[in-house]
Length: 351
Image (tube, rainbow, N blue to C red; front, top):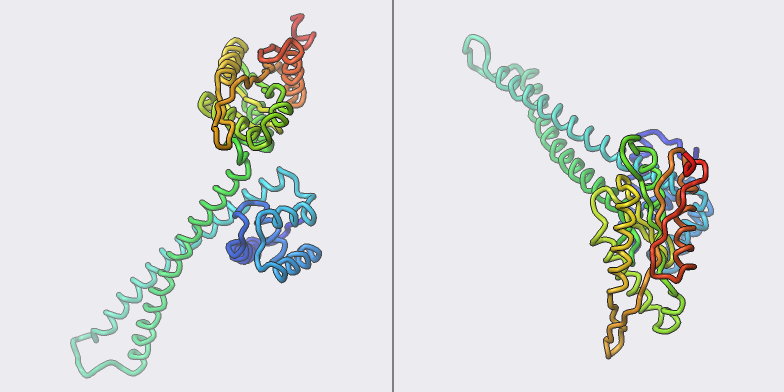
């Protein structure tokens, strides 16, 4: 385990790391937090040297430099570890916020007690006048100073609580952005893997499904070669829009990689999955994409092939994906622009 710091130490490093992150040009995401946490905690001398050299050269770290430093010096951090760091940051911020609120309440109660005590001491017993004993005056003076200090402390605690809430929201937003594909707006491969794991782990035995669609653009290399990569990006974005518009609820649409997409349907039976796949295929085939340039010609003839698989009890995520992927390539072999259903394993089919 690389990070063995106490809560107090982690809180200090969190504050220092976020301050450093805010001074850069890179986004506030887990990758940026990972390198700056290791930097301020002095965990990675090579990383510190590299960051110092970059800052001396350019003054700030941009997105590209931040990612390069991460992959070079913190590359052993896998996706699950990155998510654990994000969870730890969020948990730590919750603790700081709760502590600030609790301390504020205690300070307020103590201030009220001091105020009451001050009023009592200001009224000598028996109504005798002539002032208070010097010792009592010192106590009252100290009490008033303490009340001022408590008031200042409450203001600071309120500020800390607000900052903690803002930071928690930023951490949550950064984690969400880390799971999104920037071009299509769908979840990325990491988000797909997490959604698939959760789907198979939480699937009730009495609910049909899950089903999986693997979707691939037909002849995408030809599209790029004929119209250029910017047009290819617009095609990918168009497919992303179609999926976002038609995949709702607990279902997950993802850019699986390159020109391949995936849709996880946790509670959809085989027939429903086939119907959705056919609808998506038809929507893509009917779509038109602007060519770009001055003419802005609308180009059609964009198609996808789709493989559909329904999960078999006891099947791993890798086996499930492989069957859907084989169905996808069967659809391509049958002529493209079509949907193919993956056969169930022999043992299952014979039951």
